[in-house]
Length: 92
Image (cartoon, rainbow, N blue to C red; front, side, top):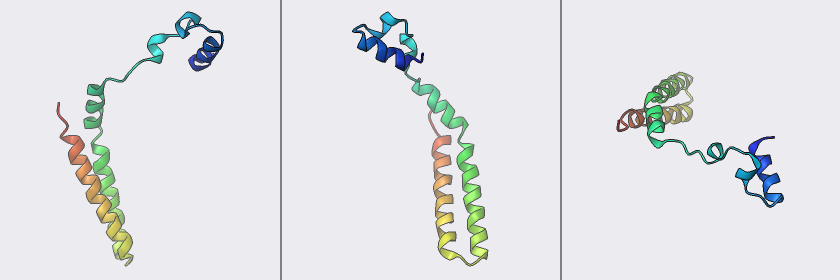
């Protein structure tokens, strides 16, 4: 049975979840914030790829004379570029 089902069974039986054999460490684990920042800094390139894709989309729609769509695409490209700079500059 999954741990959540074991918890429900334990609580309905009036016992604490640790008494019914579930792994308490697995249920209460909290991710390490420092490792999350490292992961964000390593994946900052995704934002730059998004920037390039939105920029290319803007160029295509500008050539098709769809100016409102091109403006939106260029604004999103700028947003992705700034986000990439932000995530790349995280403290080490």
